Length: 188
Image (tube, rainbow, N blue to C red; front, side, top):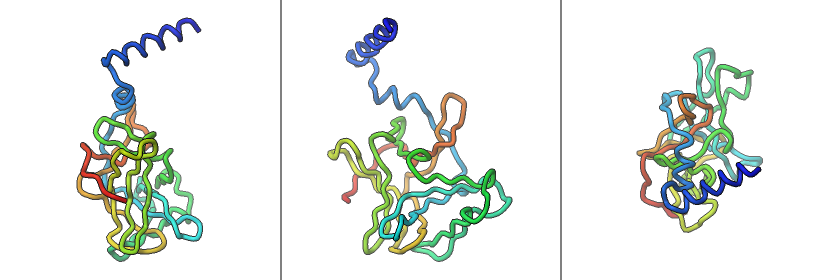
């Protein structure tokens, strides 16, 4: 217990001196790894009656059988076919903050931002919304290109892409909705 108190005191003193910050320490714990963007689709998936939606991300891991199909455009409708068979080893499905989070450059924003699907009369948008400090910027990440119901494809805005979380040299299953640097803020 004494060692823990000493280590905590040293870490606190180091952080107070400005040599390291908690944000930089958190950001450096994980890095990023590239993914094949063509293997993924981001979807506004209906919740309950469909009046609201949440982000789902589907990944096609092998060509054994399709995980999803898309039809139409602006907005494209997604058929999540992985819901109709045992997709183990063929598809991955990321349906909440355990599977994905927001990252800008070296800053993992998973605990400070949530990814929210916002519907309007004209469009469906994916926004990065601050959870702790409402004075922080809100980010427009993806749009459907029109309004719609059901499973709707979200298309990333320029500068955004998917990346995989990495710990040391080990690539993890968690996905980042990633941008190299902050963008101009958007109003909700």
